[in-house]
Amino acid sequence: MEKLTPHHSMLTKHFKITKNHNKTHFCAREKMKKEPKIRDGFYIVYAVLFILSIGLACTFYLNQSYHRSHTHSTLHGKMQLQLYARSLADMLTLCLKEQDAKICQKQEFSLPQGYHFRTALTELNPQTFLLDIHGSIVQPSSNNTLRITKRYILLLP
Image (spheres, rainbow, N blue to C red):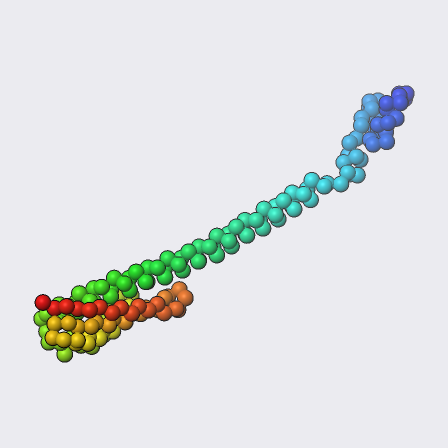
């Protein structure tokens, strides 16, 4: 049997010394079993934190995207109401030039995508008319009603 040196005696605290065919082998399995696997626990914590951060980023993006979409939809509806009101003023000017004022006095229009308009003409004198236009649309995303009211003075030559 081999004689152990002080260096070997320190190793025997952590390793098991076995003899195999007259050779000394150190088994590191004993030490590995005793050491806790702290690193594996941290990987799980990091993975959970990573998944939570991705989830929070996605919800923040979706929330901002919804608000942006709602704002763009409202702006589009308002601009479209303005454009249709101008077009209706031009149409009623043409109606007054070609038809009698009583035919053009009160009209209703239903335009594509749910735009609804009412017009009313008031005769101030034979060549001057007051035109009131009321328009509305129901926003599909929020069920809010956008409205427009315009008043024009039409002067006919």
